Image (cartoon, rainbow, N blue to C red; front, side, top):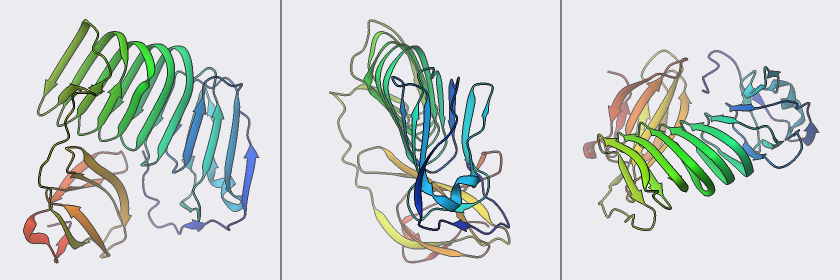
Length: 289
Protein backbone atom coordinates (compact mmCIF):
# COMPACT_ATOMS: atom_id res chain seq x y z
CA UNK A 1 0.00 0.00 0.00
CA UNK A 2 1.19 3.51 -0.73
CA UNK A 3 2.97 5.22 2.13
CA UNK A 4 4.45 8.69 2.49
CA UNK A 5 8.06 9.57 1.77
CA UNK A 6 8.54 11.62 4.92
CA UNK A 7 11.21 14.27 4.62
CA UNK A 8 11.77 13.82 0.89
CA UNK A 9 11.08 16.42 -1.78
CA UNK A 10 8.83 15.49 -4.68
CA UNK A 11 10.46 14.76 -8.02
CA UNK A 12 8.32 16.59 -10.56
CA UNK A 13 7.80 15.34 -14.09
CA UNK A 14 9.67 17.23 -16.83
CA UNK A 15 6.68 17.15 -19.24
CA UNK A 16 8.73 15.18 -21.81
CA UNK A 17 6.52 12.14 -22.30
CA UNK A 18 7.99 8.89 -23.63
CA UNK A 19 6.83 5.31 -24.09
CA UNK A 20 9.30 2.58 -23.18
CA UNK A 21 9.22 -1.22 -23.20
CA UNK A 22 10.54 -3.27 -20.27
CA UNK A 23 11.45 -6.94 -19.73
CA UNK A 24 8.42 -8.99 -18.73
CA UNK A 25 8.65 -12.77 -18.49
CA UNK A 26 6.91 -15.53 -16.52
CA UNK A 27 4.79 -13.08 -14.51
CA UNK A 28 1.82 -14.57 -12.64
CA UNK A 29 1.22 -11.89 -9.98
CA UNK A 30 0.91 -8.13 -10.49
CA UNK A 31 0.97 -5.82 -7.45
CA UNK A 32 0.07 -2.17 -7.96
CA UNK A 33 1.23 0.57 -5.57
CA UNK A 34 1.74 3.21 -8.27
CA UNK A 35 -0.75 5.86 -9.36
CA UNK A 36 -1.32 5.02 -13.04
CA UNK A 37 -3.93 4.00 -15.58
CA UNK A 38 -3.24 0.28 -16.03
CA UNK A 39 -4.57 -2.19 -18.58
CA UNK A 40 -3.75 -5.90 -18.29
CA UNK A 41 -4.53 -8.15 -21.29
CA UNK A 42 -4.62 -11.87 -20.53
CA UNK A 43 -4.84 -12.85 -24.21
CA UNK A 44 -1.65 -11.31 -25.62
CA UNK A 45 2.00 -12.33 -25.42
CA UNK A 46 4.06 -11.14 -22.47
CA UNK A 47 4.90 -7.45 -22.69
CA UNK A 48 5.22 -4.31 -20.58
CA UNK A 49 4.92 -0.79 -21.95
CA UNK A 50 5.01 2.34 -19.78
CA UNK A 51 4.20 5.88 -20.89
CA UNK A 52 5.55 8.54 -18.53
CA UNK A 53 7.74 11.61 -18.33
CA UNK A 54 11.33 10.76 -19.18
CA UNK A 55 12.87 11.81 -15.86
CA UNK A 56 10.52 9.57 -13.85
CA UNK A 57 11.26 6.15 -15.35
CA UNK A 58 14.21 5.46 -13.06
CA UNK A 59 11.95 5.95 -10.04
CA UNK A 60 9.35 3.39 -11.17
CA UNK A 61 10.04 -0.11 -9.83
CA UNK A 62 9.54 -2.81 -12.50
CA UNK A 63 11.69 -5.56 -11.01
CA UNK A 64 10.31 -9.10 -11.34
CA UNK A 65 10.95 -11.48 -8.43
CA UNK A 66 9.72 -15.09 -8.42
CA UNK A 67 6.98 -14.42 -10.96
CA UNK A 68 5.77 -11.22 -9.25
CA UNK A 69 6.09 -7.64 -10.45
CA UNK A 70 5.40 -4.89 -7.92
CA UNK A 71 4.77 -1.48 -9.47
CA UNK A 72 5.77 1.19 -6.96
CA UNK A 73 7.64 4.48 -6.76
CA UNK A 74 11.23 4.27 -5.55
CA UNK A 75 11.12 7.98 -4.70
CA UNK A 76 8.28 10.45 -4.22
CA UNK A 77 7.35 11.40 -7.79
CA UNK A 78 4.86 14.02 -8.99
CA UNK A 79 3.90 13.44 -12.65
CA UNK A 80 2.33 16.35 -14.53
CA UNK A 81 0.22 13.84 -16.44
CA UNK A 82 -1.07 10.40 -15.56
CA UNK A 83 1.32 7.48 -16.02
CA UNK A 84 -0.04 4.80 -18.38
CA UNK A 85 0.92 1.12 -18.21
CA UNK A 86 -0.08 -1.57 -20.74
CA UNK A 87 0.65 -5.19 -19.88
CA UNK A 88 0.38 -8.44 -21.79
CA UNK A 89 0.07 -11.19 -19.15
CA UNK A 90 -0.99 -14.60 -20.52
CA UNK A 91 0.12 -16.33 -17.28
CA UNK A 92 -1.83 -14.00 -14.99
CA UNK A 93 -3.18 -15.56 -11.79
CA UNK A 94 -3.35 -12.72 -9.27
CA UNK A 95 -3.69 -8.92 -9.10
CA UNK A 96 -3.30 -6.82 -5.93
CA UNK A 97 -4.51 -3.24 -6.45
CA UNK A 98 -3.63 -0.73 -3.71
CA UNK A 99 -4.05 2.73 -5.26
CA UNK A 100 -7.03 5.00 -5.81
CA UNK A 101 -6.74 4.71 -9.60
CA UNK A 102 -8.38 2.24 -11.98
CA UNK A 103 -7.02 -1.02 -13.37
CA UNK A 104 -8.68 -2.88 -16.24
CA UNK A 105 -8.13 -6.63 -16.74
CA UNK A 106 -9.33 -7.75 -20.18
CA UNK A 107 -9.72 -10.95 -22.21
CA UNK A 108 -9.36 -13.23 -19.20
CA UNK A 109 -9.34 -16.91 -20.18
CA UNK A 110 -7.81 -19.06 -17.46
CA UNK A 111 -8.53 -21.58 -14.73
CA UNK A 112 -8.31 -19.25 -11.74
CA UNK A 113 -7.93 -15.52 -11.08
CA UNK A 114 -7.50 -13.78 -7.73
CA UNK A 115 -8.07 -10.03 -7.43
CA UNK A 116 -7.72 -7.94 -4.28
CA UNK A 117 -8.53 -4.22 -4.43
CA UNK A 118 -8.63 -2.67 -0.96
CA UNK A 119 -9.04 0.78 -2.54
CA UNK A 120 -9.57 2.14 -6.04
CA UNK A 121 -11.39 0.34 -8.84
CA UNK A 122 -10.75 -2.81 -10.86
CA UNK A 123 -12.77 -3.87 -13.90
CA UNK A 124 -12.53 -7.49 -15.10
CA UNK A 125 -13.75 -8.94 -18.41
CA UNK A 126 -13.54 -12.42 -19.89
CA UNK A 127 -14.04 -16.00 -18.68
CA UNK A 128 -12.59 -18.15 -15.89
CA UNK A 129 -13.39 -21.30 -13.96
CA UNK A 130 -12.71 -19.81 -10.54
CA UNK A 131 -12.71 -16.16 -9.46
CA UNK A 132 -11.63 -15.05 -5.97
CA UNK A 133 -12.26 -11.42 -5.03
CA UNK A 134 -11.57 -9.30 -1.97
CA UNK A 135 -11.90 -5.62 -1.08
CA UNK A 136 -12.16 -3.20 1.80
CA UNK A 137 -13.42 0.16 0.47
CA UNK A 138 -12.58 -0.42 -3.19
CA UNK A 139 -14.77 -1.36 -6.15
CA UNK A 140 -14.47 -4.50 -8.26
CA UNK A 141 -16.69 -4.81 -11.32
CA UNK A 142 -16.58 -8.47 -12.35
CA UNK A 143 -20.05 -8.46 -13.91
CA UNK A 144 -18.54 -8.96 -17.37
CA UNK A 145 -16.40 -11.97 -16.54
CA UNK A 146 -18.23 -15.28 -16.73
CA UNK A 147 -17.00 -17.34 -13.79
CA UNK A 148 -18.12 -20.86 -12.91
CA UNK A 149 -17.24 -20.42 -9.23
CA UNK A 150 -16.97 -17.07 -7.43
CA UNK A 151 -15.60 -16.50 -3.92
CA UNK A 152 -16.05 -13.04 -2.35
CA UNK A 153 -14.63 -11.55 0.85
CA UNK A 154 -15.93 -8.00 1.39
CA UNK A 155 -15.15 -6.68 4.88
CA UNK A 156 -15.90 -2.95 4.64
CA UNK A 157 -17.96 -0.48 2.59
CA UNK A 158 -16.64 -1.50 -0.83
CA UNK A 159 -18.73 -2.80 -3.73
CA UNK A 160 -18.26 -5.96 -5.79
CA UNK A 161 -20.29 -7.00 -8.85
CA UNK A 162 -20.13 -10.63 -10.00
CA UNK A 163 -21.51 -13.01 -12.63
CA UNK A 164 -21.27 -16.58 -11.25
CA UNK A 165 -22.70 -19.47 -13.28
CA UNK A 166 -22.38 -22.50 -10.97
CA UNK A 167 -21.43 -21.45 -7.43
CA UNK A 168 -21.23 -18.33 -5.25
CA UNK A 169 -19.55 -18.11 -1.85
CA UNK A 170 -19.61 -14.74 -0.09
CA UNK A 171 -18.82 -13.16 3.26
CA UNK A 172 -20.03 -9.53 3.26
CA UNK A 173 -19.87 -7.21 6.28
CA UNK A 174 -19.61 -3.60 7.48
CA UNK A 175 -21.88 -2.00 4.84
CA UNK A 176 -20.22 -3.83 1.95
CA UNK A 177 -22.35 -4.42 -1.16
CA UNK A 178 -22.25 -7.52 -3.35
CA UNK A 179 -24.35 -7.36 -6.51
CA UNK A 180 -24.79 -10.46 -8.68
CA UNK A 181 -25.98 -10.78 -12.28
CA UNK A 182 -27.36 -14.23 -11.52
CA UNK A 183 -27.54 -16.34 -8.36
CA UNK A 184 -26.64 -20.02 -8.80
CA UNK A 185 -28.70 -22.57 -6.90
CA UNK A 186 -25.50 -23.72 -5.27
CA UNK A 187 -24.46 -20.83 -3.01
CA UNK A 188 -23.27 -20.04 0.49
CA UNK A 189 -23.73 -16.42 1.55
CA UNK A 190 -23.05 -14.81 4.91
CA UNK A 191 -23.76 -11.16 5.83
CA UNK A 192 -23.32 -9.15 9.02
CA UNK A 193 -23.01 -5.55 10.26
CA UNK A 194 -24.94 -4.03 7.36
CA UNK A 195 -23.44 -6.17 4.60
CA UNK A 196 -25.76 -6.52 1.60
CA UNK A 197 -26.08 -9.14 -1.16
CA UNK A 198 -28.56 -8.29 -3.92
CA UNK A 199 -29.43 -8.93 -7.55
CA UNK A 200 -28.10 -6.16 -9.80
CA UNK A 201 -31.48 -5.89 -11.52
CA UNK A 202 -33.37 -5.51 -8.24
CA UNK A 203 -30.97 -3.16 -6.52
CA UNK A 204 -32.70 0.11 -5.75
CA UNK A 205 -30.77 3.27 -5.18
CA UNK A 206 -31.32 4.72 -1.74
CA UNK A 207 -33.00 8.11 -1.46
CA UNK A 208 -31.28 9.16 1.72
CA UNK A 209 -30.93 12.87 2.25
CA UNK A 210 -27.16 13.16 2.35
CA UNK A 211 -25.97 16.59 3.42
CA UNK A 212 -22.71 17.93 1.97
CA UNK A 213 -20.91 20.66 3.87
CA UNK A 214 -17.82 22.81 3.24
CA UNK A 215 -15.10 23.26 5.85
CA UNK A 216 -11.35 22.96 6.39
CA UNK A 217 -9.35 20.19 7.98
CA UNK A 218 -6.06 20.74 9.80
CA UNK A 219 -3.21 18.34 10.46
CA UNK A 220 -2.60 19.82 13.90
CA UNK A 221 0.47 17.69 14.57
CA UNK A 222 4.20 18.16 14.09
CA UNK A 223 4.44 15.24 11.64
CA UNK A 224 3.62 14.70 8.00
CA UNK A 225 0.81 12.14 7.99
CA UNK A 226 -1.06 9.98 5.51
CA UNK A 227 -4.85 10.04 5.81
CA UNK A 228 -7.76 8.08 4.37
CA UNK A 229 -11.27 9.48 4.05
CA UNK A 230 -14.49 7.49 3.63
CA UNK A 231 -17.92 9.08 3.37
CA UNK A 232 -21.52 8.19 2.43
CA UNK A 233 -23.15 9.09 -0.89
CA UNK A 234 -26.84 9.46 -1.74
CA UNK A 235 -27.01 6.18 -3.68
CA UNK A 236 -26.03 4.19 -0.61
CA UNK A 237 -22.42 3.69 -1.67
CA UNK A 238 -19.32 5.41 -0.31
CA UNK A 239 -16.55 7.63 -1.65
CA UNK A 240 -13.02 7.16 -0.40
CA UNK A 241 -9.42 8.13 -1.12
CA UNK A 242 -6.09 8.81 0.56
CA UNK A 243 -4.00 11.96 0.86
CA UNK A 244 -0.93 13.27 2.73
CA UNK A 245 -0.76 16.47 4.77
CA UNK A 246 2.28 18.37 5.99
CA UNK A 247 2.59 19.41 9.67
CA UNK A 248 0.06 22.09 10.73
CA UNK A 249 -1.27 22.43 7.18
CA UNK A 250 -4.92 23.02 6.23
CA UNK A 251 -7.01 22.05 3.21
CA UNK A 252 -10.51 22.88 2.04
CA UNK A 253 -12.99 20.02 1.73
CA UNK A 254 -16.62 19.41 0.83
CA UNK A 255 -17.70 16.11 2.33
CA UNK A 256 -20.95 14.53 3.43
CA UNK A 257 -21.98 14.50 7.07
CA UNK A 258 -20.85 11.21 8.57
CA UNK A 259 -17.58 11.12 6.63
CA UNK A 260 -14.78 9.43 8.58
CA UNK A 261 -11.11 10.43 8.50
CA UNK A 262 -8.44 7.89 9.40
CA UNK A 263 -4.71 8.14 9.97
CA UNK A 264 -2.81 5.46 8.06
CA UNK A 265 0.56 4.23 9.28
CA UNK A 266 3.46 2.83 7.25
CA UNK A 267 2.07 -0.71 7.55
CA UNK A 268 -1.30 0.32 6.14
CA UNK A 269 -3.19 0.12 9.44
CA UNK A 270 -5.90 2.73 10.05
CA UNK A 271 -6.93 4.68 13.15
CA UNK A 272 -10.20 6.63 13.18
CA UNK A 273 -9.58 10.30 13.99
CA UNK A 274 -12.79 12.25 13.37
CA UNK A 275 -16.34 11.88 12.05
CA UNK A 276 -17.71 14.94 10.25
CA UNK A 277 -20.78 16.47 11.94
CA UNK A 278 -23.34 19.05 10.72
CA UNK A 279 -21.91 21.65 13.10
CA UNK A 280 -18.50 21.41 11.37
CA UNK A 281 -19.79 23.44 8.42
CA UNK A 282 -17.65 26.53 7.80
CA UNK A 283 -15.19 25.64 10.57
CA UNK A 284 -11.64 24.29 10.85
CA UNK A 285 -11.69 20.66 11.99
CA UNK A 286 -8.57 19.49 13.83
CA UNK A 287 -7.68 15.91 12.95
CA UNK A 288 -5.98 15.23 16.29
CA UNK A 289 -7.18 15.91 19.82
